[in-house]
Length: 206
Image (tube, rainbow, N blue to C red; front, side):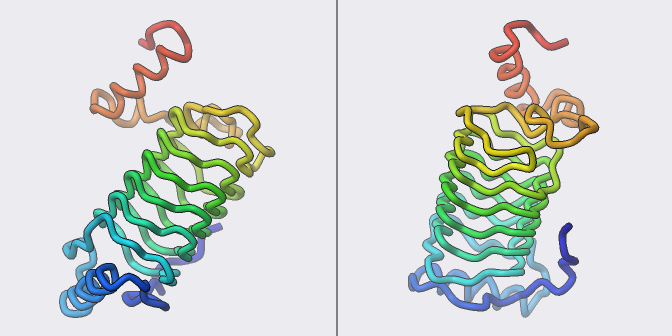
């Protein structure tokens, strides 16, 4: 489903229009080219990436809180463990992107396409995901707590209700995958999951 990311790029196909974002991205690219150590080089958050083409670009482990990727192409980009909390992703294309363990909570991603993306253990809680495309994704342990999924395109059809707990709740897989409660034990995120479970089920989870 996902293409090999070995051919991922260390330079954007098209640079962003905003001078501040372009400068930050150039510094990031220079560090990558000098050190060949993408995860050790921090790009920074609250940047405007309008006009950029970041297909297959290397962005794993990056702090990108509040950044604006609206309309940006991020197809097959590597965003492993990236932090995109409160990011703007309106109409963005993340088809086939690696979003494994990325934190994209509280984002606004109306009409974004995640088709074919790796969403294993991705956090998309508290997000506006109306009319987003989630067809053919890799799913398991993905969080959608209190997210708006109306009009979203999923493997089993369009979602017409507003909120969902997790991808497992939507039965995206015939074999239920281990939940975050099992994989993270007593972590703060697991505690939040338990509170959500109690709210939806009305009884404590053992």
